[in-house]
Length: 69
Image (cartoon, rainbow, N blue to C red; front, side):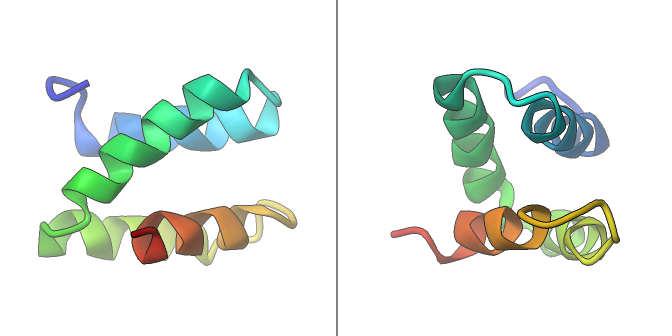
């Protein structure tokens, strides 16, 4: 996943949640998001997307990625 561009990672995560894919896959995406959250540019991009009106659950999941551990 390290070679996946930041915007693609975020889009993959949002699509995975929307399509209700396997929780294990979503967890892998969240782990990578959490790893990248130390990068200010990535964090800004993620926070902008997490505030979008894509439906309930997206903001909670976005917040969980940054507050885990």
